[in-house]
Image (cartoon, rainbow, N blue to C red; front, side, top):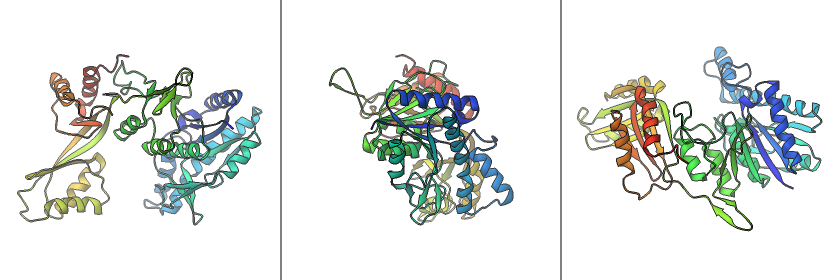
Length: 408
């Protein structure tokens, strides 16, 4: 049995015309001899009637602090609506289909409301439907705990559902259909000559996703990578093959072609950050570093881009948490300088480790455009630069040009 998992995002399901396109894609997969398993997200985006953010806002108008259990119950309704609509539209077009909630699809989670992890999948019901030549349409983003409580998987959870089902069913490939043609070297809204990548390794796509690229959730990639299930990022509204995510592909004859990591794969960004700088001179007591980060942890504020030095601490938070972070630290007599309107620009390349001159080219690119670097950091696969928000787009373009990513 050749199984293909096809995940469709909210924009792919937002109108009868878009869903007709989805039905055609599913029909074509069946024509090619595949058994499709379809995963759906909620319809549309914030302010659309059934989008996840719309449902959150609706509940918070009644109770600003709803119980996690009831919040998850409401959030699961978005996928129910899109799933039933799509399965009904498939059936009306003579394609047998059956909607399944996450629970009915056998997805069992750890029970952590709003950010659950999948523990295992019982695929029996799915296999029965496939054997009957019926297309399962599965609600993404949700599962059920071992205690029988509905849980959701957090942002990007439908990608995670698709990858996990791909592993459980030993799928030939997991197709992530969205409104872009695949993985680009940079955001095409900023960089005119951004190029579509034909193939990319699991490692590279994980790094791009973690640094701000929104084409696929990194948790989904990690699940697929562990089992060696290829992913494809494709557009619902174009006929191209998109971007293959794998470590190898079959070439001519029996040859296996290895997909090599690129020196620089792409440039991405996070646009809404605030930077905190804290001098260690003022308080004059031991345990200063610990006090700062314990205070952030107690307030459930995520910190990033952390530099701890003998005389100061520098880190970033999401802009919306900037004032709260300052107040919390002021309460323990720590007084940071706060810089709003910051953005992190990341150069991502899984093969840059040990290659001299990459940082020099980053600094050169930004210096040539007179863009000050507020802070920098690096890992084996990334170099990050914090810049002012008004310089972000110029920084992305400058780095894309410097590493000649627009060239094939």
